Image (tube, rainbow, N blue to C red; front, side, top):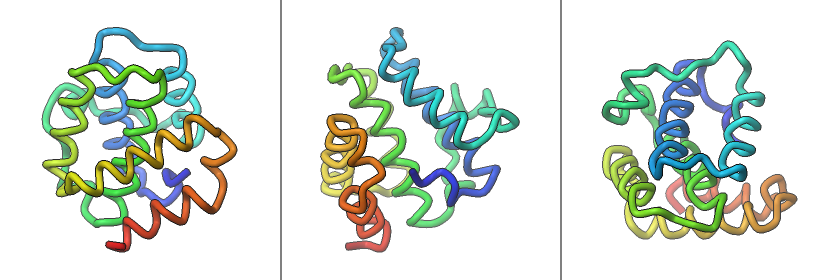
Length: 141
């Protein structure tokens, strides 16, 4: 939904975080894979995740604005909630991402609720309701 607003380098970092999330619990659920493949198609086949970012620290330097950080966090949360089973290792991954990207606990809770709404109703993902709410959070609202 928001990946077209990222630079190519930011898309690479997103893809690294997305890959880290789907690998977190050791089991790539079909729902997670479907969303990940959809995101890969959206950003283009030429974009690849830097291995150092998949298995290393979150690159906050590349994800350098509030908008980008909120959009990336939301997109990663979509993967976390995709299979209706949030594993403790997935929670650890998103906790680390939110800490590094300076996403507060309240913002994470709101973004996660929006991600759950988007997964439960895929048409809502494209609706102005979810999109507008994420954009409002990105603006600090």
